[in-house]
Image (cartoon, rainbow, N blue to C red; front, side, top):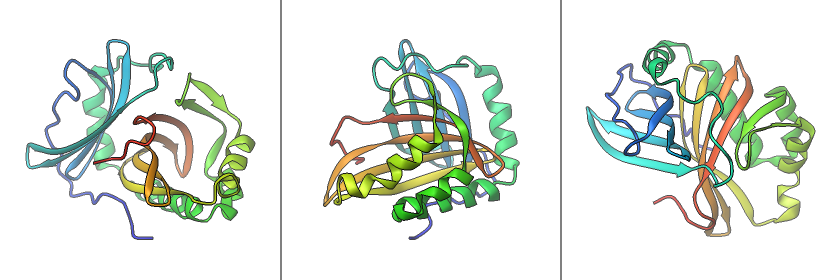
Length: 209
């Protein structure tokens, strides 16, 4: 599959505040793109933004499902810009390689046992649903059984931004030609291992435009 990795060109675009009235809880920047984890009142979500110079030209956003509760450790606004600058300058080759391997496994779910090398046991998961720790066996079985549950269902990586120890993935699940689900997932990594993830999605059956 062709690489979905956003190129890093070394500049730090000037990001807007995300959705109007939102507090930015986490920020990652690479090249012309920025990723946001945000809170707005009782609503939380993820956004992927693309800039041309300082002009915002494209954005994708999805809110966390109602009932998921607030993001844990929200409210770190004062730290997000220094962290984003540090991540933008950091070596992201390990994050890049992990995501590419993840895409290959999702394209061939018979390789799902390889996920045990790439995800911490247990992993902290924020969405869908409330924050929890996820058993790795459960995750591997779920991925491995996707084709058995629905042979027409296919995972597609629509784009990913890698910056230091973070990766923000825009994804879709396809059922034939139709989109069954679409959303954004933010991954935190320790080296080549995913240790935490935040997930949001659009309404069922709504595709990315």
